[in-house]
Image (cartoon, rainbow, N blue to C red; front, side, top):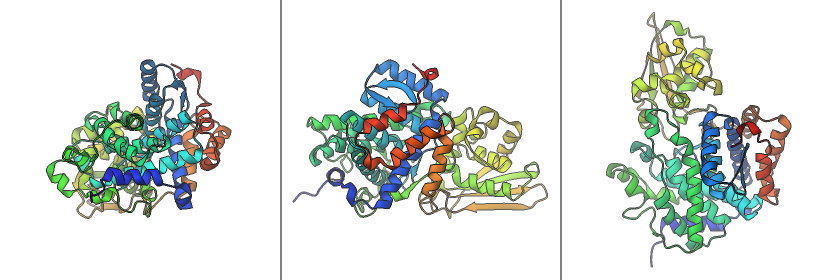
Length: 469
């Protein structure tokens, strides 16, 4: 008797998932994660990167029937998913599955939304597909135990393609065998590289949308019975052997790819961000905010030490010179020195703190020069994105604050009401309260939406001419 492959087991789960079998709190949390991502998209829609990327995609793709959040473009199916993923992820304010260190909503939701609208599917069907995508993608990413980052791959882009193939394929009503094949096809399409960390360039912003488009493509090919490798994950050149070094592969745990399917819900392990910055800086940011609130005088700071998990060093601590002088907002979002300097000085790290005037302020630059890092041997990363800030003052006194569990983490979650408050704050950038409330009500009542195209139209209803192509 042959042993079922990981692809086939994930396919069976995705095909067989029944929304009425998912616990009500999990469904409710899924709706709130979707709401959070849509709010992030509305907050981003007037940003230069959003306008330029959307225009570029529209110029290449031409017109189509699908809509995008808050922009006037009408695009083909895959291109709408690409742009929506970029909008939802562009400010780096979207959710993260903690153990997988992956942004999943921003690939699986665009893939599911575009596909559901394309097919005229119901809100319940969209919701089930999204849950299937997050549950499978979270497990796939968790196998690597942070190893993808170590070798320069971005799991949001890489793993997001597999998760999106299952979400889109479910909506296309693929058989389990076809869903398994979609994952084998995704293996040749998935991509996402971390070189942007060197200079804050924009490539990361397209990773989740590209993953969504790849997933839709893979599912469409599988629907036509395109032959594909059955061992997408455990094969000789499968995902983990090809994307991890031998040493990291030895540390990986393939059993996590299917652990607890249908019994435990990884949606409950998705962290919602309180700061619009890389999740890996959140612990230190909150620790520094606590020191600010305790009345620290930053003019008397002699030195600052940040204690961080070893697994985050390459992303947010090095190269040190670059992290102390962010060239743009994305550089700043991935900088431990900046997160600490802003939080110590201002007591906050919000959207305004990533404007050029904020990260180039002379007093902030002086403080960034005083920030060093050390590896925290006591960290529980990646379960928790820990952070500790140790400040030495000019009189020798030492002040410190430790965040053992980052705010928003599943062990210290933001309540659904807090997610709604964040959504309205993000929408206030460009939407009136009444429209934002209608969208909120539609997403939180998704199971009763008869045709997702009505939701798609509502999300695009406030598009304005100043961002037209």
